[in-house]
Length: 69
Image 1 (tube, rainbow, N blue to C red):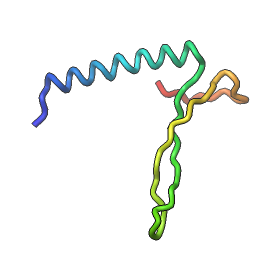
Image 2 (image 1 turned 30 degrees about the horizontal axis):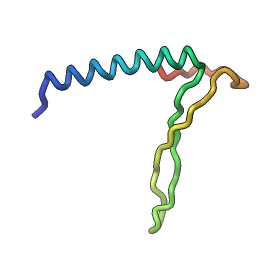
Image 3 (image 1 turned 60 degrees about the vertical axis):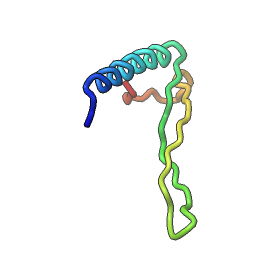
């Protein structure tokens, strides 16, 4: 059973984080990129993992219309 107070507190912290993250991205011109990575499972295939990579947006060759926020 979820606690509505905890849910509201969590949503407020997430919103505050996203506001600060957006300000940092604008200030430094860097964003975090999440990309899939295929890792051998050791059995008969691969597992999909995700890695985070900081990307310098100021030196990109072609500006992108895509944005995180």
